[in-house]
Image (tube, rainbow, N blue to C red; front, side, top):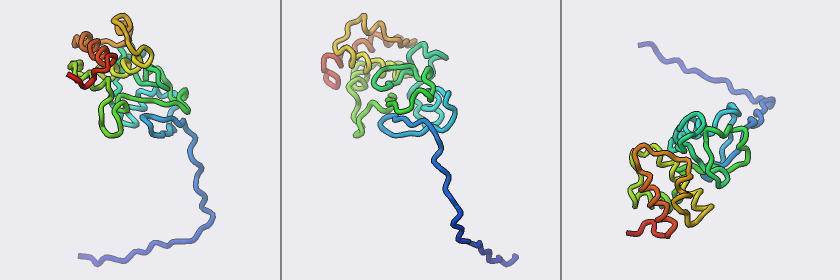
Length: 178
């Protein structure tokens, strides 16, 4: 076995080293945390959430968000994440389905009502339904069937009647109650 040679790294005091300035980017808040996107400004928010931040609750529902699976709250309003380029999000606040629950892990009343009413099905569309329901209840605290029917969400598992019951449960203040 060959002997190991000691190797020394020469360290010089070079005062000409200047740190690079912070890269320009798009600053936004997602689920209460600050983020800076320094990549492609035209990247859709959906791909930033899923591929960069690994927040995979928001789902792809088509190139124009046709079925509501990709809904997020943007400054409190439900919007399609696939239709939101990062360049339009500077200084904005985004809440995804991951951001609905409290910091202590307590479920949002809409999430609890979905559990109470078993309004989950396969689960693919559930995050979009949750976001749409939060937005609807903010705008209209006691929505009727027509209001719920106008939501952009689609479910192939047939959970719409249970979703309707869950939304009405929240409106009645009975989430988490028998």
